[in-house]
Image 1 (spheres, one colour):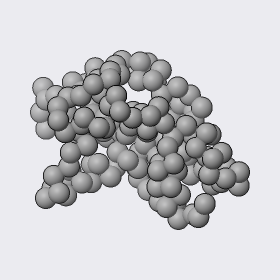
Image 2 (image 1 turned 45 degrees about the vertical axis):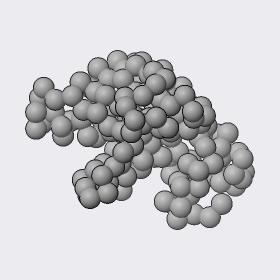
Image 3 (image 1 turned 135 degrees about the vertical axis):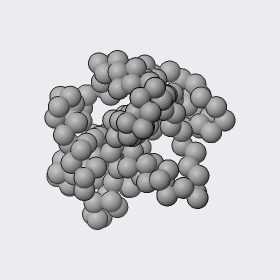
Image 4 (image 1 turned 120 degrees about the horizontal axis):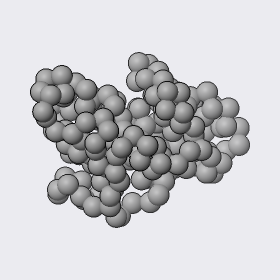
Length: 163
């Protein structure tokens, strides 16, 4: 629940609403979005390279939809806002690289990926709005939140609701 609240706090502090363009949010924060890859680990997904909270690049795959990209951008912002401060606390000169590759032997990496997913879902699909909008059906939810069907299904499952 801490991640859910953190996402709500970020949205409020940054004046980000579910209808807002997330690419503009990245630009306001000082980041860049490029289509491409940081290496073989993220050819079919997104990744992040961050020197600071206002100097970062999010890489998007050229193989994904705009709905998937919206979630990916929010996911990478989750890594930036939740995990970069931890990295910088250990080493102020560190540059963080986050990809979809997760070492299955690393509980820390698994948790970081789970947290970034939860952050993205909570930022883009706040629980109260999601539950209220469910009445209008699956297609409405996809259009309302501008995310993929997979993201809608995962959010419903995480909230313990049936579509």
